[in-house]
Amino acid sequence: MEKLAIFDVDFTLTRKETLIQFYSFMVKKNPGLIKHLPKNVFSGLSYLTKRLTAHQSKEKFLGFINNIHEDDMKEIVKEFYEKRLSKILYKDAIDMIKELKKQGFLIYLISASPEFYLNELYNIKEVDMIIGTKMKRGENGLKYCNIIDGFNCKGEEKVKRLNEVLKAEGKEIDFENSYMFSDSLSDLPLMNLVGNPRLINFKKGHKSIEILRWR
Image (cartoon, rainbow, N blue to C red; front, side, top):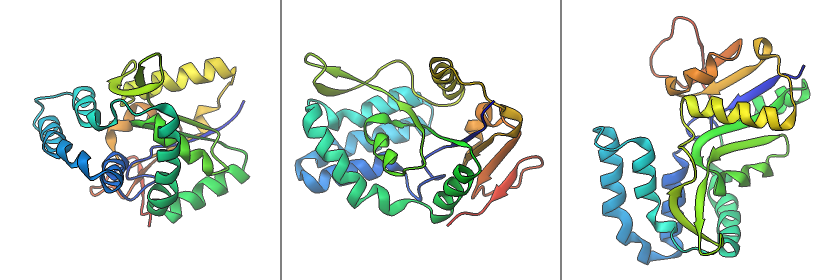
């Protein structure tokens, strides 16, 4: 049986919210995309006030990716990783990934953020698998659109997606000796799977989960 080290991404692996960083990066490349800002702010506020689900809010926020050809997106996300995403990684998170990899753990990143840019985190050579929210493609599957393919990869959906991948890969996991790292209790479904859950930079105390302070 193999052991997993599962990492959330936003505020666990990174110091900042990656989707906001991606939008900011895109606006810098194409200032005309600033027109999406009011809608993006509205979608965020509507989620916080529970007028929209996380799924609905994310789809509205991602309107700025509509009609980007997959070939162009490959170049965009490569540049995004080099200039922005790689610069906001917690050093302590990377050190933990490297240490657990040396110990023989499989390194899985599981996030609600979109896979189309999260996949650039395979540049971290220790990462074995990335699972994120998938986006549909329009126009013969060649152009991106802001519609989520399936479900937002959050909460219980993360467990479902993980189990699907493990089944497809034919892997048996020693969950009792596995780890899960996250900044948020929204990841309790994953944390409850493993014997070693860890909260990252959690502002409150917790009676049963160890809290790590990462920089």
